Image (cartoon, rainbow, N blue to C red):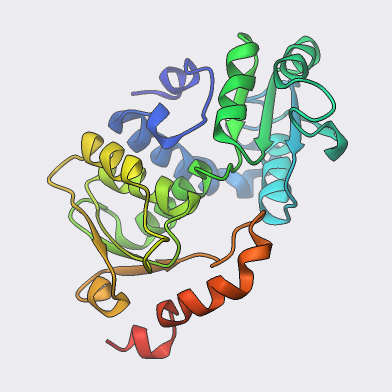
Length: 264
């Protein structure tokens, strides 16, 4: 598996766009690029994008995701085109129209939006345009890959490890489940009633599982974290669900990752 093989894939909308070999190679390549950052313009990938234009279209606010993507495009030799938020997909213009227009001017688009379906519609409408998912309500694949890169740096081999995710069965949990299954990592997910990982995600993770990796759902955080190698959590209230904040604060109060949980 080479970087060239990975590059043949048009879009990255979901961890499930990769097969297991792709995902392993992606982590290897990410580690190499990270190690070479200190070389600056002399890094082997400093001209990987060779002056290509990459648009950043974010319907949702962002600090870390936007900043790191823009830095990455520049460090790979590309040019960032910032698309203003008022272009929000499907509001002023149809999703397909936005895609077809951008396809005439840029080579790739990094999108952070609400609907995974809208993202898929965008990618399907522009056959030459590369589309990267920087977060939707359903999935956050780049976050999952970045987190597994961190775990790989600490552990070396990932296979056979066990992670606990404590909190909302949201987009981050979904992508984590997909990646964990492919990498042979066991995943425990503890969530309150009504906030569990969707059944469709459980089925998807099960279908791509390797090396006996298991996905288990728990109702008690203490049970989920017993004998695991790492504990993971995320915000209780994702963007767009601010009206549910008070209800969620009560529901997730027993699911805090705090000193007491870490001491178990």
